[in-house]
Image (cartoon, rainbow, N blue to C red):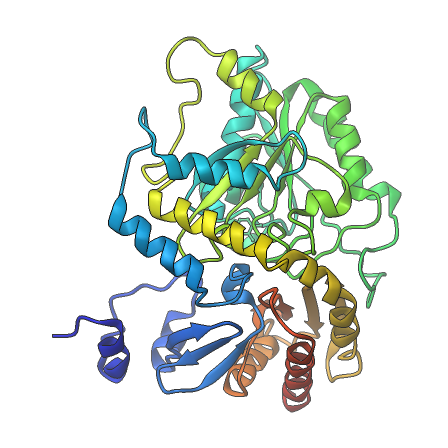
Length: 446
Ligand code: PLP
């Protein structure tokens, strides 16, 4: 009768792996070759058989302050013992308001009305519904169209999936939100091995102008983009691109949504990518780093204009007919407050900013490794694209993933692109260790 996590780890070899249908996983492969993580501290994971792995991906882009942080764990324990659950429908509890205030303090000026969710997917769908509610409240309910972008990822729920632009996430789930269109993605094949932002490409954002003319501005509710596309392989925007989207959306009364689930909380060295690029959207979505990955929580920051229009422009009663049982959950809210405190106390975003150049140099040192066809970077993110094997797309990067893990390095792969995004507490020597290990792995991966 196993009860504690330690007992579970000790008995890992006897676990029944059949019942957990794993997400975004090759279940058949995993269950034949399980890799089980037992514990994590600072920059490392340890497996159930004692193998230590340097975390090159901050878990899944979320553990920005490093693993096993005591202040976050203590806040979670205290919250769970004090108020395990409290509804936030027509009731409240102090920690949710405290978390919203702490989060609002690091948002771009004016984006200080916070709606809590439980994940990045829920944040995307919340933001889209918020945009529709905004236009409805202004008497423009005919604005129903949502514009996303190819190679965009906004999670797996129906709204986010529909505005997202990943074939595998869309094609097998045929029913989509109606009235969606997509911009072209921002990655120019001509610009390989570009350090940081791509040079200006004036025409790319102007495609939005064409979509506006095609559909009619009076039918478009919102445009949603990741400032830097993460999950589809680190696509860094061209200079001026986001500002141009801002200008066009403003011109036509269309809301601009930035999905900052990955770029938020210091990934680029600033609290938000909006701040990094100097472009402020109307709505900004977050998750992951909000609680340092410790407890599921997402959030949507709305401008006062969006919030006030919906709240003041609706008939008496519930203004925004939306929310989740766990919106502002006491334990998650406590984790968020502790995490935001940690980011500030330890200057973690500034630390990341200070290492961005070292990171860039180290990433581009892989240029001459076998099969590397592109390297992209910004902040503490890098994408290393490999040539696909004939007839086996993704196989080369997946082999690199397994080799890296066995060599003690966690990387993330999507198709044949390797993405690296370490906890932001990474040291300079750990950056060199990471890219040194990866170079070795690439040399071994035919
Ligand atoms: N949006 C972006 C930009 C993401 O990168 C992700 C996840 O990687 C999501 C949304 C979905 O977040 P979640 O998996 O928490 O639902």
